[in-house]
Structure formats: structure tokens, C-alpha cells
Length: 276
Image 1 (tube, rainbow, N blue to C red):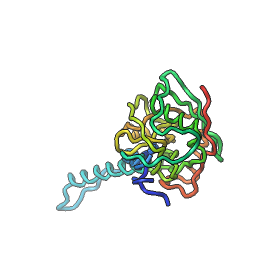
Image 2: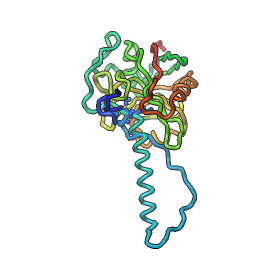
Image 3: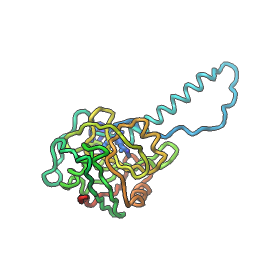
């Protein structure tokens, strides 16, 4: 998944750098997560592709310097992807945005480690069904379920459809009331250990590079290849898995592939919660 700080048109954009990451809070940033972009984490970037052996250089060129510069370029590319993908809420969360009915104003109760919920994201392109599991990240799971239950996510958009540097689909990121990766619910939640691997269909919170910066932004991982990039940071709390509708997630990405600021973002018309 990378969340952003700049405004579209959310507090320092960077993806939750997912930009709230994915952050975005894309892991995601909120950019695959609330306000600083799931910049939140540096943008997730895939490993550099290996090319042909370097040609010998002329006199006066130190190949050790060439190699050093190449390695630095790879690190910069990874940082840009993670930061852009997961912009999240920074250390100072933005003011609460009035949304839904009786939505939480501080970290809600965690979901029990033996509990699950089924959350359905209805979009114009179809439904995405997510199995939320308390055993994965109790705090993040409880937060997502609480926001979904009160109507916070209704009408919000997938503002990021990020790609890796080689063009591989990375994440779709949403959940920002500002619609640009800079916003959140007005509070942040505590970080939790990542106890499972990132892969296609994983749903995680976007965040910024700051500790405990997850808010409302979340992201859905689009390709197994994204695991290396997200795993390098390993800070985006995984709380669920898409059980049906990955074709819809792919369609949302294809509508505006590789964009950190989608011009015509696909909305979540309604988000509903069922037990289990």
C-alpha cells in the first residue's frame, strides 16, 4: 500500500507514502493509509531489473563510482515508490472530518483475535469483498470495521492507483476524506507487527514514515511481485484479504494506471459490514 500532505486541488503529501501508502496512509500506502503521504513510507518500489553487463569505460572513469551511483539510484527509486504509494497521516493528525454517523474520534476498540468481519466495498465497477481478521492486526482491524460500520467510507474514492518503476501494478489506495492522500479521521492508531506476507489481495493500512501514523487510508495489493517492495518497509499493518472482487480492483487500477493523483477516481458508493 503508500498518505499525502499536499492538498489535491492532504496535509503534507509526500504513501499513507499504500501515499496513507499505499503510505499513501497503494500500502499502503494512508500513500497503501491519514495525512502525511503513505509518504508515509517511502514509495514501494520493486527491485531494479538487471541489465546487460556494463561496458568498459574509457580512461579516467572509476567503475567503483559507477556501481555506487547505480546502487544509490535503485535506493532512491524504491524510496520514491514507497513514499508515493503510501502517504499517511503524520505525527499531527488533521482535524476530524464530519462523516458518517457516530464515527470514532479516537482509536476504537481492537477486534478480537478470534473474530472476523466481512466488509463489502460497493463501487460502480462491482463489489470488492474483504475478510477482516482480528488475528492479523487487532487494532487496525477494529479501526477499519468501526469506520466502515459508521459510514465513514461511503462516497470516498480510490485516489491512488500506483505502479512499480517497471510498470507492475502496485496498489489501489483509498479511504481519504480529502481525496488526495492527505486526510484522515482526525486521529491515528498504534502500529502493530506485520505477521504475514504481502501478496496479491492483501488489504493493509497506509501510513507515513512517522510511527503510529495510520488513520483511515488503506490499500489493496495488486501483484505478488509487490511483496519485495512492501516487505522492505514491513510497517503497513495487514488486517484482511480480498475474498472476491480482485477483478474489480484490477479494473479500478486500469481506469487510471500508475497515477498518484487519479483525475477521475472510482468511488466506494457504500461500504457495509457483516458478522462474520
